[in-house]
Image (cartoon, rainbow, N blue to C red; front, side, top):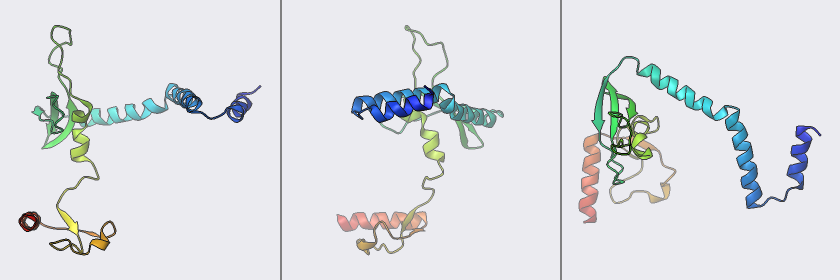
Length: 164
């Protein structure tokens, strides 16, 4: 019996339960991982980061603003004011007597958050928004317009005073 017929027969004769769904998901996901589909993307990202870090910058200690209480050790490679790479503690070998202080997953993603393509780079407001609410029926459909930092600060201060 060929592999295709075996798979078709197994899928048509199997009652789809939560357990069988998880089994098939694990089997297919494991097959994809073994075939190298998952590791290819990771290797490409590592290669891109290595090529950017060829001209060394300066490693600086950076704060983690996620407020998770872990006080993670985060270090950023800064070149020309741009964070190129990020790492955690590697000043000594990791041991039971003197463990390395590792950064949490949220702390290590800060570079992506700060330099992501979809981040906000300047203040914006809805086109038809006015102090006090404006046209509330346009929420979610209205266009966004760029405003200056001074205008944004004045709007926020005015709304805080109005609400108070």
